Each structure stands twice: as structure tokens, then as C-alpha cells.
Length: 192
Image (cartoon, rainbow, N blue to C red; front, top):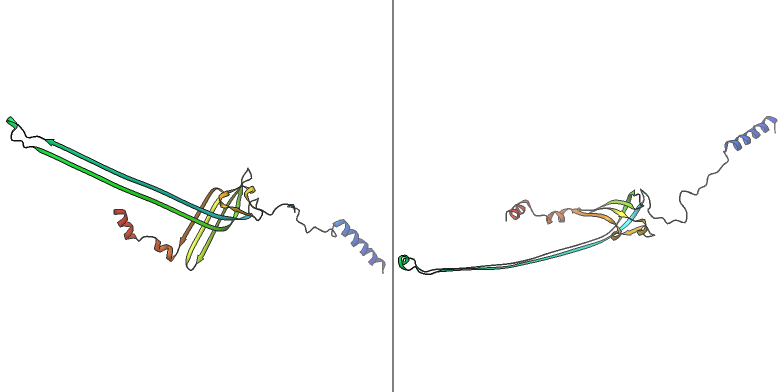
């Protein structure tokens, strides 16, 4: 091996040792501990909300009114003998009753995103899910706050554990449009 080749090899080895070319980086991500659960705890993380909501309300009212009026005036005497006897009877009754019943339920699983981590550690979540089935469009929107302690190890949370929750469920399509009364029906209902 010529002398100049030996010098070049020695220079390359020295330069690589000084420059750190031979250093290797770890493939392990040290940003999270390998002992922590993989649950949502920061902005941008996602989790699944199991929506199981049901509500019902019942209101009942009844009214029963009756009224009777009676007046009798006798015939006049003396100078007032031209006044005939007069009687007046009137009765009125009114009865009404009504019942209002409303109930609803919504069951869905929905993946949402953490949009904010509050100063006390709670997570603000928001998400939208849209389905289009045979021309029927259904949309679910949800916002609310969740405590990280209420999130299950499989990264799910029940909707009853959400605070200040706002769930909107709406639908549009052939069937949904037929549920709305027409303009003439609305006018007649408003008038009567």
C-alpha cells in the first residue's frame, strides 16, 4: 500500500471520529414513557365517545270551571205596577284537559378530537360525524369537557361523563323532508 493511501485512510478515520459521522441515533421515542396508557391527554389526540342518551318528559293539565248566575225581580206595585216580574238564570261550564309527552333516545359511537387542555387538566373535545345513507343525510355534532380520569384504558368515554355537553343530531333527505309540514299547512296552523 503506497504511503499516500495510508495517510488518506488515517485522515478519513480521524475526520469521521471528530465529526461524529459514526454516531448512531436510537430508534426509541423517548418523548413518552413506555409504561403510560395510550389515552388522550393533550391537544390533537382523539378518543371515542359512546353516546347513550335518552330523555322523556310528561306534562299533564286539566281545568274544570263552572259558573251560575241568577237574578229575580218582582212585579212593581203602586205607581210602578206597569213593571212585570222578571227573572234571569244563566249558567256556564267549561272543562278542558291536555297531556304532552315527549321522549327521545340517541345511541352512537363517535370519535372526537381534543381541541384544548384547560388549566386544571380537563380536556375540551369536539367532533362531527356525517352519514349519507340512500340519500338521507344524518349529522351528529358533539362538544363538551371530559376529565382524563373518566377515559377508559381503551380510549373511550361514556357520554354521561361529559360536562357542558352539547349534542346535535339532525337529518335531511326524502324521509326527513316529508316530516315537515308544507307552507299552506303552516299558515293554516298559525291562523287556527
